[in-house]
Length: 273
Image 1: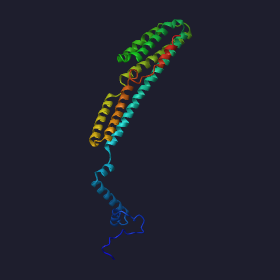
Image 2: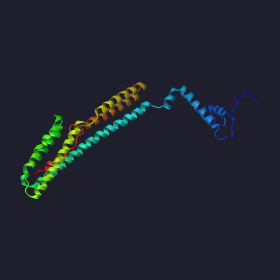
Image 3: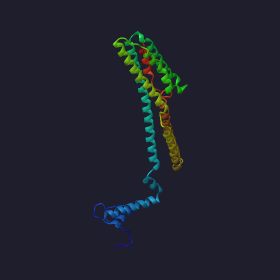
Image 4: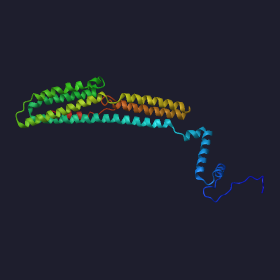
């Protein structure tokens, strides 16, 4: 036997033991046939490699910034969804108010010519609401408050209360007009109350501060290179656009994305004819 000649890797007929790497041969010689011992030794070698190479530690470890980024995306998505639901609710309530106005006008038309002044007041109030929502909200958002709504519909209620029905059909028509007017006024008041507090500002402030700390952490942990700078810029733009959507959708009558006035326009065309 030639002592100076290096020994080759021994071949074994046991499955799973034939290896080519020197580290695996060493592992087989240390662990033998016991799978538990082999697994513990494999973990020990992996730990030694991770301790020697910091990049391995970064790959095998958890990424807290990635988890926080995911949570931030979920929270921002929830905020945008909630504010869009508020926007859609305002649109739905506006359409409901317009449909109630048509029912009031139809009931007053069935009442007779005595209800003509009340129908004129109804059209005047709707015209003022249209001007307020789509022409005056930018100048004076305070006009969208509850006090304005109460003052606007009170003359119509007084006009209906001054009617003196004679026939049963007039009584039924007047009762239907009063009921629909009450529902219409309730919807209008609900719209104003919702506009007073469309979003939880404390939650929005917390999300903004959270985003600032998260991006500061990204900047500290990331290296200075063009790829990192571009990625951080895109992330900042995404967060800023989400915040813009949240703030804009809370202003459905004065923001960039506005509720369509088509429901009120069609109602004004059909009413008092």
